[in-house]
Length: 255
Ligand code: 0L1
Ligand code: MG
Image 1 (cartoon, rainbow, N blue to C red):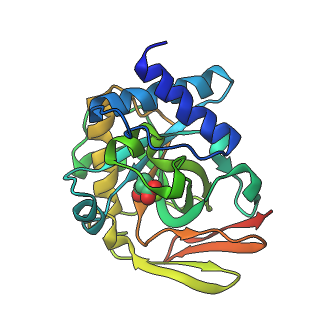
Image 2 (image 1 turned 120 degrees about the vertical axis):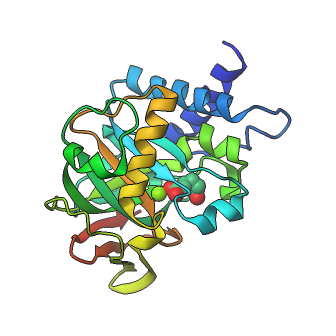
Image 3 (image 1 turned 90 degrees about the vertical axis):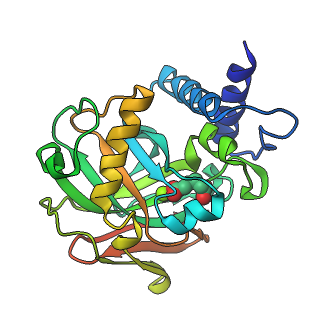
């Protein structure tokens, strides 16, 4: 087991056992390329346990968050079938460390993607768009991390729920997006906060998938990124995201 394998095991076990760990970057330094390698190896451990890759998530898709983190590009992570919760289903807090929810837009891919696809050609590859909620749950204590840490930790991916698929439209660049807990609004934004247009996030996903050799396949889902800050989940709450024209999606949070 080399150093990267040990770090992959650490984030994987932390997620599996819902036990926070210290940041990997404390006491050792590693590059962003190493971080993506750690992520890949940590996900391989899940796949070896029987999980299947179902798509990718994009993170830091708002300019404000990139500036805040001092980075000039998005980050991305992998999604597996064990992370998927059905719309209206339950999320048990005991399976997570300190989960937060954020409203997103999700794309469903209709044919295998090879290479970076120009923005104007992307509709050929998409057969559905939906409102979605991403649950992020950093495996690091106090939700604190360096850029390399969070990439190694699969960009905090922990769960997702996808609403009813809608016919794709190019015109989703300024849709109102809200998140509410027990019918009380806790976050509000616009799909314009996702790189100016969620389709641009999908375009970036095709570029990064090519760069890192992780092909996007027919049937995969791509979470385009958040339009608002993420909010900590509370027990016994009904969490709902609403995206103008795309509809609603919800989960029930239990202890
Ligand atoms: O936008 C995102 O999903 C970023 C996730 C990684 C950073 C975080 O945990 O806030
Ligand atoms: Mg997200």
